[in-house]
Image (tube, rainbow, N blue to C red; front, side, top):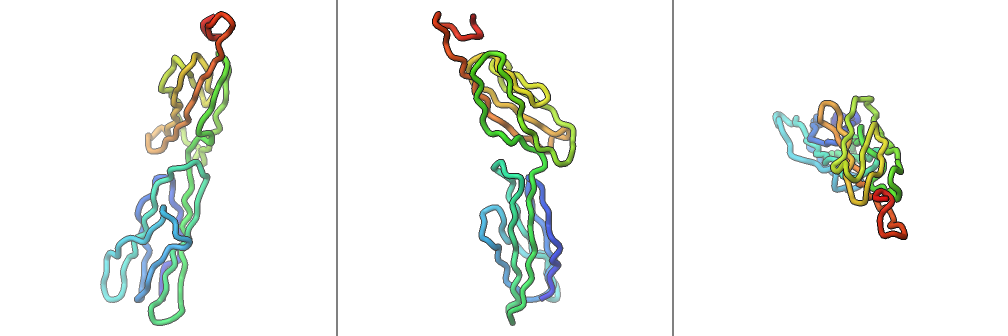
Amino acid sequence: CDVDTTAIEVDELGGTFGVNVVANVSVSVLPQVSWLTAGSKTDERDGYWTQNINVSSFSNKADQRQGKVKFLYAAGNDSKTVTVTQKRTLYIKESDVTLTAAGQDSTLTLTNTESRNVTWSSSNKKVATVNAGKVKAVANGTATITVKSSDGKYSDKCNITVEIPKSKGGRTESES
């Protein structure tokens, strides 16, 4: 069983990657996870081929995840394993933040392992503003804070809820 067992590292966008194979082998993913699957064979010729491995994009806030693709030779017990590691390179650790006072702020935790330039934006500046990851409450409501890499390839979001309690006069702090 001759398999290129070089470990594969993939970013959060996922994709399809080929592993060179020489033999009659079966392919399985261990443990069986939905984000990593064996795809089609390509470039088949004289017992050689490329086995495609499909990696789904990240949909959660994890730093990384790992799986293994096992190649088992059909005529014996020989097997080879390729480790696939998928790492997030740009994301906000927080998913949801609630602010309870006008002017209250919270700094979002950015993981940016590639040290790329980023831009921050708020979907509703009347509710919350953001500057370099520091979110400031303006008024009751919801907003989505987005961070994007300067090339636009990577991004992540955090939901902001502003819930300013009403004062005795029935107005919120920001209306006083």
